[in-house]
Image (cartoon, rainbow, N blue to C red; front, side, top):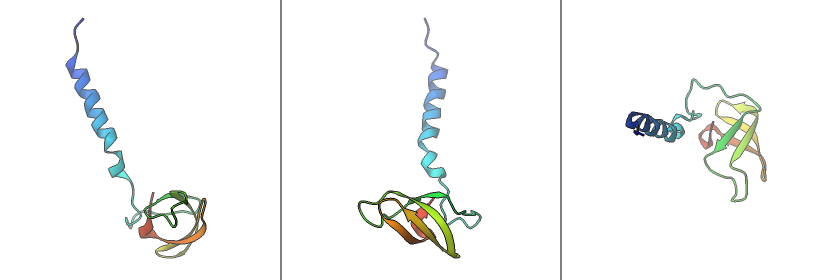
Length: 85
């Protein structure tokens, strides 16, 4: 039996690409991104140490602010710089 090293190399390359998936996250600071109500977003800062790390967008109240529901915290007004998709 002979080991095909080319197949191993491609598997390593695939793993490298998978590890870079975090860099493709769409951050809200992108002006071309359209946020919608009922979208879950990742919080960059937690409102308290016991709250969930995601928030559900409820409604937009200004260009840069949303009312959101955060599990284990409740409703909060979030600036778009505090979360990412």
